[in-house]
Length: 275
Ligand code: SF4
Image (cartoon, rainbow, N blue to C red; front, side, top):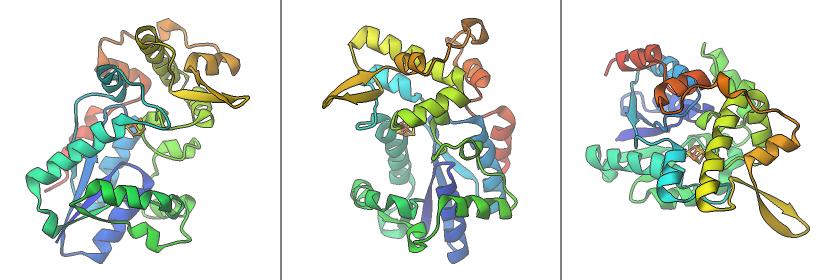
């Protein structure tokens, strides 16, 4: 049986990989990672560390577009209710790789859902058909994220820094469009330059497509868009001085300035893990 971990760079997928490797030491295991290009640089460092420790290379797939480019292409702004980026930039590239390399009859996929995410199981099982999916962490009903982070530290790895900063997930560098207002307030506090980058992109999207926003606000039974610019103004935070940012046309350099994307040394380490 071939065992494929849906590797996100989060603590749940790491713990899942550890469990699967222990339980099936003789089977082939793939760590399948869909790169959306704007992960926190520390996530790629964690990927390289964890992959070295497991002795399994990261199998990287990539659509080639970061989430906001997809939103522009689709003329649809991802939000808490509908996030096309998850399907287009993660599920579809993974599904293409699976179809090209493996047979559903002899493959099991593993997703690192934690017990608190039990309600997501039916949608994931349905969405991955004809591939079968298992969720090893759900057999450990009392396990918490803190337990997983402790296990990670005890294994000699440094957990991804977004958890230390209070984010509940290590994805899209704190810029997940599924996050609510509390999430975006945290991004504003911890990464004001990243927040401003998304604020600018959202403003450009609004200029072209009208009054829509990543966030929404409920007031007197009515729902209305809450642009990031307004959220920042209401929080009393000034924008980052434009001089502190670089020309967005140079995407790779822009990512480096914001601490996003894979650094060359981590890419070299990732590629060095023996196949
Ligand atoms: S983490 Fe959030 S923003 Fe990033 S691809 Fe997934 S749903 Fe989209």
